[in-house]
Length: 437
Image (cartoon, rainbow, N blue to C red; front, side, top):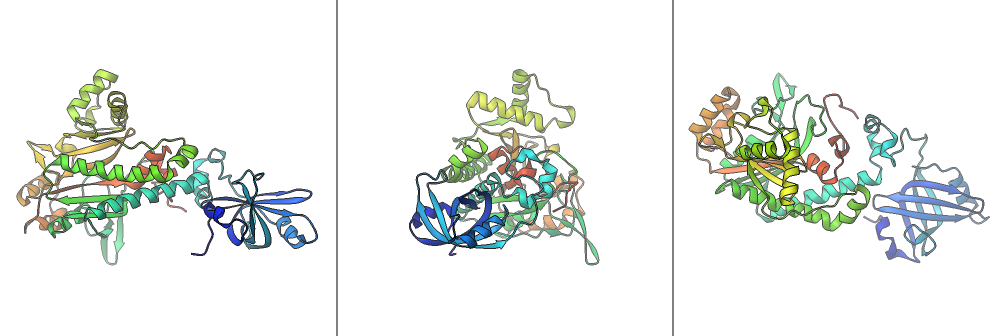
């Protein structure tokens, strides 16, 4: 593309260039006019003296409104007196490519100036903020680095269907929809199809795609429509091997983010990107219960015994930070009652883990049950028979041992930048009470 990005302007000193962007602010003084123009990479000062030669330009600027978009041709000059990046553009031509016709309904530069719901209603304006643009640059960098990591490790990318015929996976409600002359459902994860790929001999697969959960939850970390980074691997020796792989994946992603955006994240979000050391701490659930009771006088609610809840996740992170100086912890040995039927078990205990980061679960990992007879039995225990009939077919004709996990991209970004809510992290948020814009 021919567009000159503002971050690269120092390469064009004393040259005639054309730039484009939003009008960030206007100062119309007695003898001079200043425009601050911005693009997705930075800002630029445009200086127009008021004189007969610039009469046409002066008139354009006098009638210009902030947040309009402009195309400006001129000479870029270094100038130490200019506080903004030490240079300025002296224009010979200004074209208003679109005009902002009304005052903005919110001040996107100050997130506290409007209620969050108002910001979400005008998300297309809210996203203009420097912090929000950086957030999605960071997310892009993170996903790209993790994608590169798995591709370099010979993973195959798959694209699984999001419209499915049965409400098959336990644990969350699904969205029902009309599919021609019958019912269908939005997929809550690509889990079954990832395992089908294992049965197909793909050995290592990944997918980055939307998933849908019909959970009537209004918590800071839940949404009905999110992006999932899914992994499935054949021929794993044990759960430790799977946890080791996720450690390497996350380190690759966080390292790329820190190297490219670390200082900007610190400046705008006041967050230090910490690259975790290996191995991540690993604790059995029962042991964690004992630790939390001893250290913080915390006892798990009866209905959550055998699992984690939000409070225990926060305390687990607090303990790991205090004890080991680490941000991540794997919790293992959950109750079979609290895990999906397709998790393999050893002596009745699911072979899996939850990964907790900054007080929040970000991944459930598991070795899958690949043996047909046992899988059928465990599905029956959960009251699943006809709904998973198509899935069970995958295991009738030979399927290698395998396991995997999924990482919520939006939740990970929320924790990385410590925004406090998925509503601020997602490009467009969807929840029980929000399907617009």
